[in-house]
Amino acid sequence: MSALPVREKLAILSDAAKYDASCASSGSAKRDSLKSGGIGSTEGMGICHSYAPDGRCISLLKILLTNFCIYDCSYCINRSSSNVRRARFTIDEVVRLTMDFYRRNYIEGLFLSSGVIRSPDETMGEMVEVARRLRLDEKFSGYIHLKTIPESSPELIEKAGLYADRLSINVELPTDEGVRKLAPEKKPETIRLSMARLRRKMEEKAEPTLRTKKRERFAPGGQSTQMIIGADKTSDDGILQASARLYGSYHLRRVYYSAFSPIPDSSSSLPLQKPALMREHRLYQADWLIRFYGFSQPEILAGSSDGMLDLAIDPKLAWALRNRGRFPVDINSADREALLRIPGLGTKVIAKILATRHHRRLRLEDVGRLCHSIAKLRPFIIAEGWSPGALTDKQGLRDKIVRSCEQLSLF
Image (cartoon, rainbow, N blue to C red; front, side, top):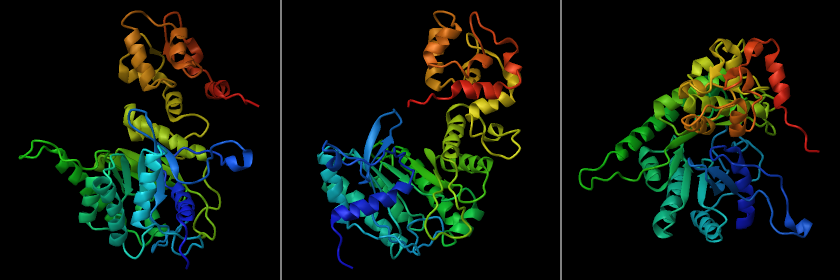
């Protein structure tokens, strides 16, 4: 096979990386200035967007080292039996691309994943070498996220943590049964063991050393994981149970949910259609309720007949409608924990409410100005001059809120 130009490799391996959701990539329709006569393009050439904890948008070069793979996971477009065009970067090419893109101010960092070629250790070793050369040889101080291979040696994963800002290890699917069925060459026990080792190493490095009294730098962005949803029959409740265990056991910074996408010549055990994209969105919303709003995992879907999130309304509103006895909440006297349960109120708005009510009592229109919409709020709050009366317990309230929250078409 003749060697491919780097540009062709970039097109192939950036497109192959789009299935990894672990850096919160934003999407865009493809446009090419060569056709329009203008400037700029949005072709699939590896630049995506991730968001830092403080809300900053970070542009990343998101690529695979290679899409060759010795594994034959049923749901993966890059599986060994897949008839896709293959490519492989050299270590020098990835380093050079990253530095060239960075010097042109296209990117602020690198997200590097890979198929497994020949052996997990050989592939992981090349990924670590990319990060090492960037840090030590090129003096690169930008963001680096490495997708680690759980079957590789602990020594290699430890080296990865010395150079990367964040490491991630995919659990693949929500259940062990799903992994054994759709990715039989991978072992859930190995994945969990690798995640546990990484957690212990992060905790160890977080302690100040006796000699320097300083903490060693080791994957300061923590670890994350990704699971594919919709490839098996796991319910949303089962997915959230798996996420809660992962957060509790391994102190993950983030669990990413990636909606299954049907692939050519796939196994008959896989669904023919992809799940509704809204399902992925609702899972993220439920995930945030657990992480930032004080909800426990069991209560989010308590009372649901099928263990699935309502696609028409967000999980907090669905919970409020099932627990109307806890409403209305007085916006001027309730504590922060009670305010966090009110549909339509986010953490930033609640902080503003708590700050404002030190000076005056809030009316319904005041709350509306803070959160831009009061459609969800009206039935669930008491404010100065406002009480919902019987509205909270009104039949058909769900449908009324859905209609009032529908976005009007722009065209």
